[in-house]
Length: 302
Image (tube, rainbow, N blue to C red):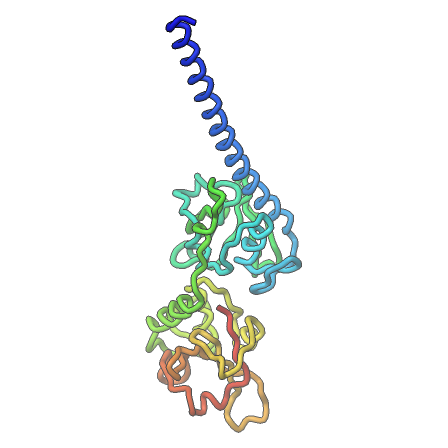
């Protein structure tokens, strides 16, 4: 074999080896891309299959669903763990730059007035449509995204091309959400009390419209009145009381009826944040007071 022949054969071998190596890398990239497309397509398909299921506050499926829990359930079915609150999911993954860039599987977020914190959310399934569990309609529904453009706040993409999704699925700690609830309430300190105040105003509150408002601003939807609010979440005892828990009270210490007439938020350090009478929105001492003695139920919704 001449030196020239040896050089040519060596060159061909190098080219073939490089081609095989690059071909393998291309194949791996194609496989990863396929996995990503399959995941997002499956999430969208699962979400669409849930249309018609009943809405139930914080229900995690498979028969009933809350707003955030529908997305949590759909992603869980494809092996991706994400958070379970609207506020937490609003920080999950990566931000989608605009409504025109939304893709199947993306989480879409809305508020009733198109600004502030999201109050409801859904899963975009493609073709200009998204699925969400609607409290107002009492079930999981399919809607056109374009019809909600004025209420649209943004979208998040939680499934990426990497097989490691752990960095894309943070869940906001409950303590952080509780602190946000209290902070939301503090900005209304001194706002006047008005029985039956409209839930659409922040110029006045009654006890339950106040709790509904400050939790809503933290991404948690509550029913309108105190007795309805007492039916959601998890019941906890006084010894396990945590900041952000809802305290439901009867009319007076000596009342023979446990009928709920008042709701307050436990603010930590033996205090509650609530509204009543002449002070309006205010802090009150809780431990050892009549407020504590009036409590008939404690619920945790965070």
